[in-house]
Amino acid sequence: MSATKYIKGKYYKTCAFSLCNEIAVGRKDKLFCSDKCKNAFHNDISSKVNKLSKGLPVKVNRANRILMRIYKENASGGGFVVNQITLSNYHFPFDVPTIDAKDDNYKCVFKSFGSFAFY
Image (cartoon, rainbow, N blue to C red):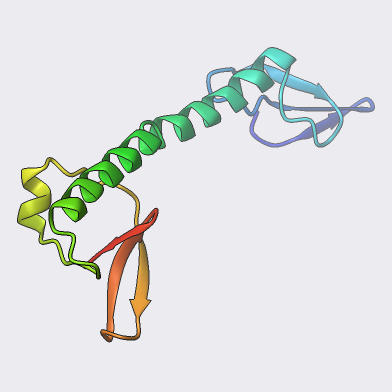
């Protein structure tokens, strides 16, 4: 039963939880047949989100530590440029989420995360 049916003052439709094929009886906007299905549906969504973001703070901290180590070795008082080969030698996590940032002084766009930026 895919569509909502109205019979004798009650609405009948299939439960919104994909693993349940029970009929949800009640209000017109009722989605789930029980609290168990409702909780399972929302837990499934949040577990998918957690799997996608798993380990990001750890990766960002690791990337910051690597860049701080490289910066201390090359400290010259100003900014510094690091190439990809150097970062890969330190096992830099390249899958760290970044944002594009624009630098007007150098007329370019670079990747940035946390307090560091790299070209």
